[in-house]
Amino acid sequence: MTEQKFGPRRCRDTRKPLAGQCPEVVFYRCAECKTLFPVTGEKALEEKEILCCQHKAEHLVPYPPEQAENKIKVSYQITGGYNDNAVQVFWKAEKPESAPEWIYLKTFTGGYLKYVAETKRPPVVFALADTDAFAYCDEDPCLECVFRCKRGFVIYIYTKGTGLVYLPLDKMTAHWQSGAKDKA
Image (cartoon, rainbow, N blue to C red; front, top):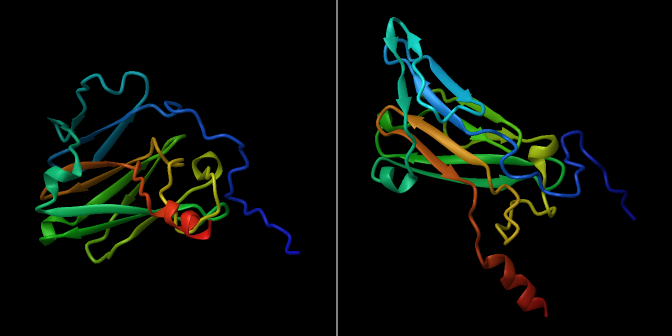
């Protein structure tokens, strides 16, 4: 019998983290120097006046991926099972200006920001640890079952050509059920 190994990034919690543990995130960006200002906290949704380069930073308002499909298509996959949980973000840009400049993954406990080099090809991988790595099963890749372990996570992807797009991690497919029916 093989002994089960527990990786250092594995979540040892027995329940999915509570929704709303991490506050919302709002993004501002300086039009002059392109500095990014992610704002979180209880009052994050209130309009802020952030000054940079002697100008007011632009509030980036996110919109759903359907509104950007003619410029960029965004998708994701959850991989790694219990021990090496990760979110892979994929994209297909129609033009170079629609390629991602940066990607932010909002999780149960905070967020991860990655800048994307012009030469980078998909995917961008966000390795998860501790509570953010909570998983109900050991499937790799995720079967996108009814439990939706990462429900509450949101991918924010910014491109020069489209602006800020958000994609909730809430996919659910029925293909995970087909194997159980075949075995019965």
